[in-house]
Structures are given as C-alpha cells and as structure tokens.
Length: 99
Image 1 (tube, rainbow, N blue to C red):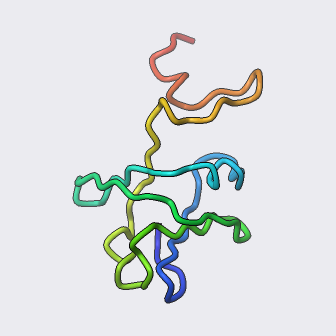
Image 2: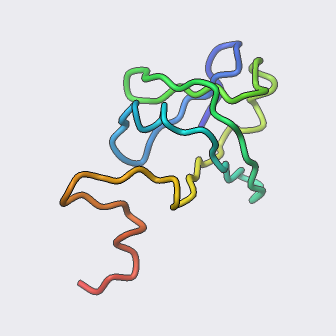
C-alpha cells in the first residue's frame, strides 16, 4: 500500500483478482502495519485504477494522514469476506489441507 495523490487515497495492489465491487462493499478493514501494529479503518471510497485499487479511508483526507499506512497489508475479517463462485477458494480456505 502506498499514498497516491494529495487527497489521502492509498494505492492497494491486491493479492488476488481485483474485483472493484468487492472492495466497494467493504465498510471497514484491519491494516497490518510494517511495525506489526494493527489499525482499523473505515472505507470511505474505493475505485479501480489500472492494476490497483484506490481506497480513501474515513479521516484520511490528506496524503500526510494516509502516509502512516504505507507498507501496510489490508486484512478483512473472515466473517466479512464475500462468498466466491463455485470452484473458487480463498488462500485461507486451502491452508492446512493435505494434497
């Protein structure tokens, strides 16, 4: 995650396919910062930008306010993860399975 522009947007490069409706449906996320601290942020807006998603968090209206989030990893509670189409799985669904 890195700051984009001067209005507090952050550029997020997703680990999986970037479905913009999936990001627009998010209301809050947990962000694991490089320091190991986890912060909770409310999503104000999400939109697609080429190979990334641009997200503006409530309370982050400037690039300075968003800068502490740089390098963070967005985490979504498992209870809030949207269902996938049949035959598709999240990585956490596969962890621990024997193959």
